Image: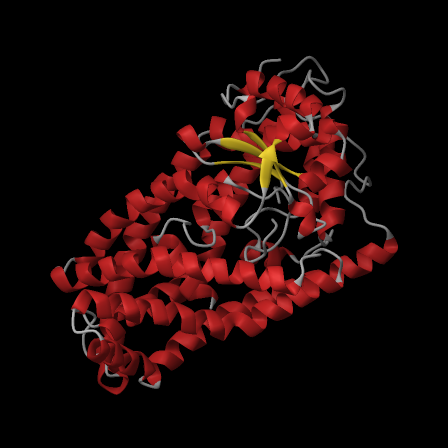
Length: 455
C-alpha cells in the first residue's frame, strides 16, 4: 500500500523502506518514476550557469539498440501504470478499511486483547501495516515478475520474499511506535496536534539519514572496496580530495548487488560519522573507472552543494503547511463520515487513519512539486559531477554521456518519456535530458570556468 508506506516513510524519516530524504543521501543514478527502485536527471541549464559549448542539434545523446528500445518503451509503460495504480490502490485500501468499519473493529479487538492502551495501540498499528502490506503484495509481486522478465532483477523468489519480510519487520519495529507517538500527540493536543506532529517529525528526518547506512546491511552484503578494487579506491580519493567530501578509504564499500540485479549504481549515503561511498559490484565490474568517478562526483555534489540540509529545510516548510491543511481536511472527513466509519474523533485509533487518508490524498496531488525540487537538485549534482572530474578523467563530457548510456541501458530507461509522465512521476529527469545536457556542457571550451570549480 504505497501511500500508507509513504506516510510512514515520511514520519519515520526513511527508516523503513526509503523516501524523500534517502533519495539524496543514497540516491540511485538512473532515471525512472518515483515509485521505482532505480531513478536519474535534468533538463535545461539554470540561469547564471557557466557557458555551454554548442553541439549539433541532431545529436542523440542517449540511444538504445532497436531490440532494447522496444523493451524499454514497453517496460516504462508497465512501470508507469504500476506507479499510478499502486497510488490509487493505496488510497482505496485506506478508504475501504475505514468505510467498512474494519479499522474501528481492529482497534476494538486490540483493546480487548491488551488492556494497556499503549500496548493495544502498538498492536493496532503493527496489524495495520501488515494488512496494508499484504494488500499491496499482488502489485509488488507483479512488479518483481516484470523486472525478472526483462532481465533487470535476477533475485530468487525466496530471497525477494525475505527482503519483503525484512522491510515489513522494520516497518513494524520503527513505524508502529512512531504512529503511536503521533496518535498520542493528537489525543494530548486536539486543537494544535498538527504542530506537535510537525515538531516531532523534524528530528526523525535527520535521524533517518544518519542511520540509513546502518540498516543497509540487513538487505545487502558489503565488503571494503579496497579489498576488491584498490585501483578504483585510488581514483576515488582524487575526487574526494577535489570535492572535499572527507570520505577515507575505510568508508568505501562494494555492495554485492549482482546476486539481485543487473542494474548499475554507485552512491554516497549517511551523514557525519555514517557517511560512506558505496559502489555496486555490477558497476565496478562493467563500466570503466572514469564513468564511476563521474557518478561518484554527482553523488558528492549532493553533499558539497548542501542538498540534504536544503531539502530538509524545504521539507520542514512543506510539512508544516501539509499537516496544517490536512488537519482541517481530516476534521471535515470525521464530521462527514465519522459516524458511519465508527471513527467519531481523530483521537481514536481509527480516527488517526482518517488523518493518514487526508495526508495520502494530498501527497498524491502534490507529488509533482516534490519531484520537481528533486529534479532540480539532481541537475545541479550532474553539473557538479561533470566539473568535479574535470582534470581527473580525460574527457568529462564523454565519460558522463557514456555513463548515462550504460546506466540507461542497464535499467532499460525509455529515451523519450512523455513530458507529463516525467513531470508527475519522475524524481530525476529523464536519461535523455541528462545525457543531452552532459554532451553540450563544456564551460572550459573557450577559456571559461565552471559553475562550481574555477578550473
